[in-house]
Image 1 (cartoon, rainbow, N blue to C red):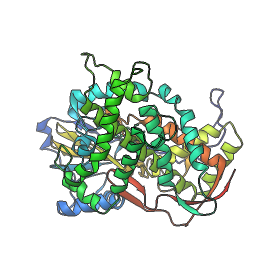
Image 2: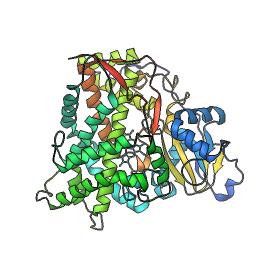
Image 3: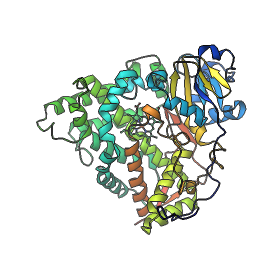
Image 4: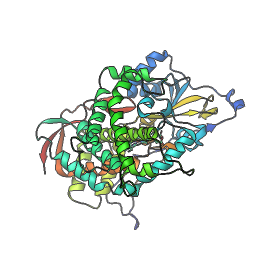
Length: 474
Ligand code: HEM
C-alpha cells in the first residue's frame, strides 16, 4: 500500500485479504420470464426438520447447503410459503435497493413480532414503517450519538472495576450490564444504573428477567407458539406482563412531566415528534417502539462485543496489535480499533440472517423465484465467501486497514431502507468499550477451543458467553 498525503497509512494492510465475487444478475423480472428460468435447488428434508435444524444450528445448516447446493437454494422456514436463501452481493444489492413496497421485511413475520408489538419500526411495513423511521432517525444520527460517549465510557469503567482478577468470567452478561445502562440512559434520560424503587429500575429488572427466561428450555416452545400470532400468546403473554406494566407506567409519568419540552432523551423526543400530518404516537405505539429499542438495542451490541473478545483472546497477534495501539496512544489506534470491530462483525455477525419477501418474480443469478417468496439474506454466508474474503474463517483485522467495507459485502447491520437504526450507537459503544477494556485489562482465554455459535431467537451468540480470565488490571 503506498502512502498518500491525504491519508498516510500508519499500519500496513496484508495484501490479498479482500477480493470480489463474480457478477451475478439479480432483480425483479416479468412474470412471463419466470417460466424460462430454473428454480433454485431445494433442500430435500421436511419443513419440521429444517425449522429445527436451522433454529438450533443455523451456522452448520447454511454452510452445509451452500457447499452442497451453491450460493442460492430453496429451504422451508418458519415463515409461510416458499423460501430461498442467498449470499451473493449482487442479489443482496437488488433486494436492498428495491422500492420498499416490492421487498417488505420478514421481521414483520418473525416470532419476535408479538414481543416487540406489531406497531414498531422493526415489525411494520409500508407507510407505517416510513413514518416511524422518520420519527426515530434524528436521535440515532451519528452526531446525536456523540453525546453518549461519556456515558458509555463511565458505564464501562464502572463495570470493569467490579470484575475479579484471576477467575474465569463470561463477558456477555457483563457487556449486557453496560449496554442496558447505555440504552436505558439514552432512551429514558437516566444517568448511571436506575435507583432501586424507581419505575426505570423495575423495568430494568423486568427486561433482564425477560431475557433470562428466553434462554430457558421452554423458550423455544414459546417462540414456536407465537408463529402466526399478531399479539403475544401463552408463555410470551405471561412473560410480558411485568415489563409492559412498567413501560405503560413510565409513559404515563413522562406524559405528565412538566419539563417534557426541554428533555433531550429519546423517549421525550419521540413523544414530542409529529408526522407531516401533525400526528403524535399513541401509548401503544410508544410501548412497541420503546420495547423494540430496549430489546434490539442492547443484547445485540453486548453479544457482538463478547464475540470480539472471544476472537481476540484466541488470535494473539490481533490482540497484541490492539493493546499496543490503544496503550501507546498511537496515531493508528482508531484505525486498528475500527478494523478489529469490523472483522469481529464479519466473522461472527450477531444477527446471521435478515430477510425480505419479494412481491414480484425475482431473478437470483441463474435462477428465478415467483412473487411472494421469502428471501433469507445470509449475512453469515456472505461474510464467509472465500472469493470476497480470502481465508474467510481467519480473524484478520488487518484486512480492513486502509480498506472500507463494501455496502453489499459487509452487512452486519442489514441495508437499504431497513438498515439498523441503531448502527451508529452500536459502533460507538463497541469503540468505547473495546478501547477501555484493551487499555485497562489483560485478558486471556479459558480454553484454546473456540466457543461454538449458539442460536437464540434471531441472534447468534457465543455458547459460553465469551469466557475469559482477567490476568491483570491497570
Ligand atoms: C451490534 C449491534 C447491532 C446489530 C449487529 C444490529 C443488526 C441489525 C440488523 C441486521 C437489522 C435488520 C436490518 C435489515 O433487515 O436490513 C437491524 C434492524 C434494526 N435495529 Fe439493529 N443492530 C444492532 C444494534 C442496534 C441498536 C443499538 C439499536 C437501537 C437502539 C438497534 C435498533 C434497530 C432497529 C429499530 C431496527 C429496525 C430498522 C427498520 O426496520 O427500519 N439495533 N439491526
